[in-house]
Length: 193
Image 1: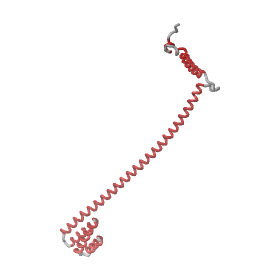
Image 2: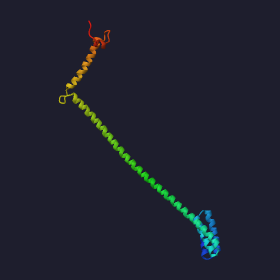
Image 3: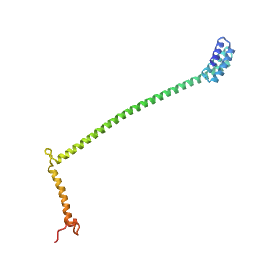
Image 4: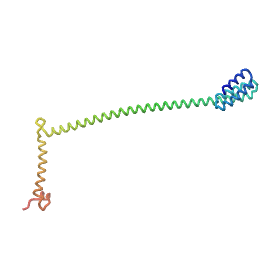
């Protein structure tokens, strides 16, 4: 409806029927306000201004031109604000995409580091098992002759020490524990007849 009224006003203005152009422009303004179409509303005021100028009503033409410029500025400001919001939304989306990509790269790096740590841990476990095997082999080599696999002098000395210690304990118990004197005191004191 607004387009039809606006085009009718333009046709009347072109045919130099200023009063009919003003009537159509006023009707178009009302329809544009009802539909909240400021981009068409300011065009209606431009036609009104030109029609008033044709009638040599310069005061009304000035008022219409001022309203035309005010509405045109609002429309341009709204468009600029919309573009700015779209630009900011795009910039924010791009920033979020970049952060997501960075986070994805960090996750990949962390997964690679985790795999490397797991491999290192597995290698450490393998080395510990090998070390324990080598340690038991060395222990056997210290105690046994590698050629004959018989126990050597060191093992014999350690074994004899423990046997002597057990023998001393048993002898002390047998000869001193059954008396009236404490066994330790009995060992440390001289024999009295």
